[in-house]
View 1 (cartoon, rainbow, N blue to C red):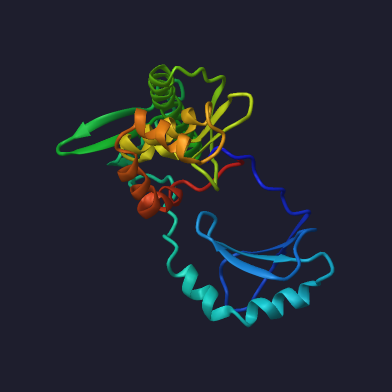
View 2 (view 1 turned 30 degrees about the vertical axis):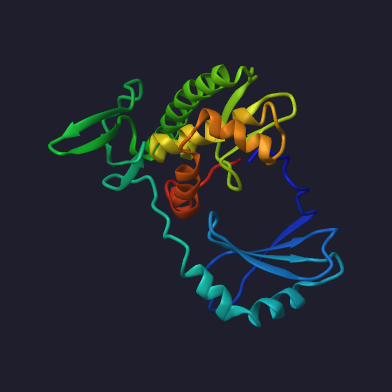
Length: 250
């Protein structure tokens, strides 16, 4: 969190491997000196990075030689959970069941309601656009929560953030640019509020310290004393938040 992204690979290609259902991405990178292999837990994909002079046959042979390792890693990745009628998703750490009303009332807002001892998120409108409406609503809820917590921590640390945005960031929960713009993953709204609060504090502290040195962590702890518990939660459970609803463009 808080650092610029690494240079993107120059070329991305797809590879089909018999006996492997997960998508395989072949990335040719100008700085790569050898073939490397990893399994993306957020995209549920196998990623092979190659030097520019390697061909697809070499990539396929390399992957096949590590197929057991790949399958074992894929087995640890949580199964995706689409935004579909009747499914459960967390909202601020509490399970909510999705209810697609299919009543054609596109102008009626998404709402949360209690049904007995459980909670529902009701999404009016056509069923085919309900997942998109839900995603937009979650992004708006996330931005509202984050704006409040950013304002709180900025006031405590006497710092001034610029623009705040929410996106579907795959590799980080938040970031801070050199000009003071803060960006966050909308998926934080699915986590318990203390987790969103910590990430907001983390990025606000980057307005003063664009690093992860002792002074930076002292700032975070000053405004968010429970930071250690929140960091531990993200390490253990953060990947689960990427299960829900698929991913849009970052």
